[in-house]
Amino acid sequence: MTDDGHELIRQVRQRLESLRRAGVEAMPRPSVRAAAVVTVRPPIAPPPAPVPEPSPLPVMEPEPVALPVPEPPVLVPESVSEASVVVPVPVSAVGSLFDEPGFETPPVPASERLGVLETAAAEVARCKRCPHLAVTRTQTVYGTGSPNARLMFIGEAPGADEDRLGQPFVGRAGQLLTDMITKGMGLRREDVYIANILKCRPPDNRTPTPEEAANCSSYLERQIAVVRPEFLCLLGKTAAMGILGVDPMSSLGRLRGRWHRHSGIKTLVTYHPSYLLRNPAAKKDAWEDLQLLMKEMGLAIPGRKRGASE
Ligand code: URA
Image (cartoon, rainbow, N blue to C red):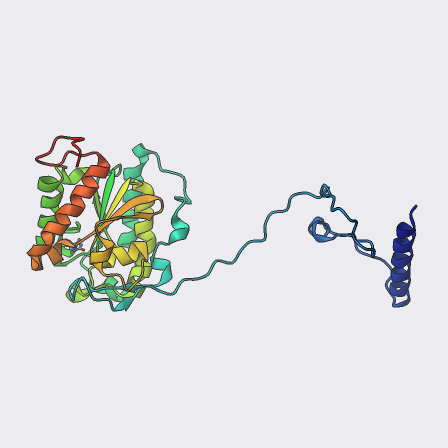
């Protein structure tokens, strides 16, 4: 043995002896994790040329990293202005970058989706998470359309007509949305899926509160996970903030016209039909958004041949 080896053994003995004198009778065996970080270094100068040591230790899982909790983002009331921002949305109600890889639940087979959605709708019909809405609603408005839709539209909350009929987008704004789908995109309304951030009508059609949006978010996320559309079209600021959790100060004008992602789904933001009814000049922008969507979906744009270059 080298002099260095003898010196190391002497130091270890000395240390053990001092521990015994201090009352230590036994030493615990090092755990694998502890062993992974223990390096025995002789108290000598390092060798002149560093030789990489092969590690006999198992590869350890990295320590779980605590993810930062983002500040609550903000909802904008549709009825006030598409460009103003006032109401914070709780984190639990929004998506985030961490949604990127996709869904936590396995896909529901296409043939079972309708049944799964009907069961979920029945659960929502009994919901009292927002007791004040449970007493003012006529009924809940869950969603409508194809359980296997490639495209899902998401609005804000039921209005008076929807509350009365139990279907989303059946009033004036609903008629415009139907025109956008049928006359604009050349699809049938029953080919897409339509849902809202809230399943209950807020009294006086006010903007959903952050608490209401948070209470309802798991229902909508379940709908998205079951239908698993290829595309989401978010109608207005409330839907955009509720689903994307984007910078709360973003105006809808800055969110629209480009692709976002939610749970790995290609997601587009456009103006809410109610806003378009109040501001018809914005229909031009909304039509541009729909054309972007159609192009990505491989749908023919009226007046153009499919696949014609831009
Ligand atoms: N506005 C919405 O956001 N949703 C509806 O269902 C009707 C109007």
